Image 1 (cartoon, rainbow, N blue to C red):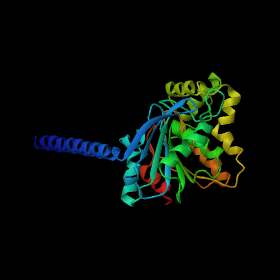
Image 2 (cartoon, rainbow, N blue to C red):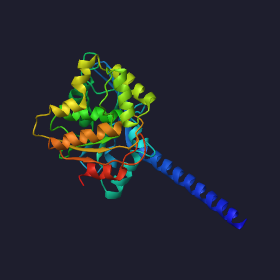
Image 3 (tube, one colour):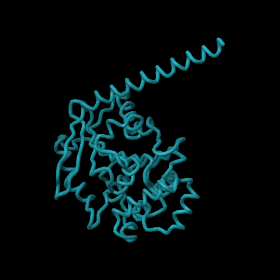
Image 4 (tube, rainbow, N blue to C red):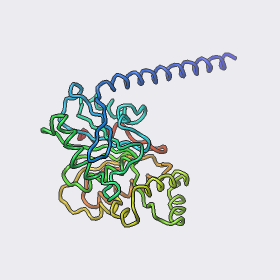
Length: 293
C-alpha cells in the first residue's frame, strides 16, 4: 500500500513539474516574440508575410533565413514549442544572436521558378534585398538558411541555384525524396515499402507537389538530386541534415542520400539522424552548425 501511495505521489510531482516546465517555456516564447517585427507585403502582385528579429535583440551581423514546414507560418520560427525554439535557446546559451528573417507565402508553398509560380526569382531579386535593407544590409555577416520539412525543399532550391549566396544550410527533416508528383502508383507503393512511410502522408505530399509543378519535366528541373548532380560552381555552401529515422513521409531516405551525394561532390556536409518520426531533428547540433562549430 505504501509503495502504491509513493508511486502516486511521485507521479503527481512529475506531472506537476512537467506542467510548470511547459508553462515556463510558453512564457519565454511569448517574451521572445516581442523581439520580432512581423507584417505583410506585396511584390509583383504576390503577397507574402514575414517576421524579423529587431535590432535590439541581435548582436551579430549574420542573417539566418527560416523557411517553415507545411501548414506553418512566418511566426513558426519563434513560436514552435519543441522545435526551432530550442535552436534559439542554444544560441542564447552561447551568446549568438543573429538577425533572423522568416518568410511565408502561405501554409503551402514551394520556392519554384515556373510560369505558374515564379517565386524563386521573386525571393532572391526582390524580397531578400527589401528585407535586408530593413535590417541595415548584410554588412560583415554571412547568410544562412534553416529549412524545415517543406522549407527544407525550399532551402535546396535557393542554395543550389545561387552559388555563394548562402554559407550554411540546415535541412531539418527536409522534403527530399526519390518519389515525384508524376510517378506511377507502383513507384509510390515501392517507396512506401522501402522507407516505411505512411501512404496517406506520401499521397498528401504528392498532391501538394502536383499543385506547383506543371509536369514531370518541370519537376525534374526542380528535383534536389538533379540540382545537386548538375552543380558546377566552386562555391559550395555547407549542408547539415537531421531527420527522424521513422519519418512518416520517408524523408530519412532522401536526407541520407542527399548527404552522400553532396559529400561525394566535395560539399562540406553533415548527416545527423535521430530517433523518432516527422519532424524530429537534433536541436543542439543544428544551432552549433549555424554558429560555425
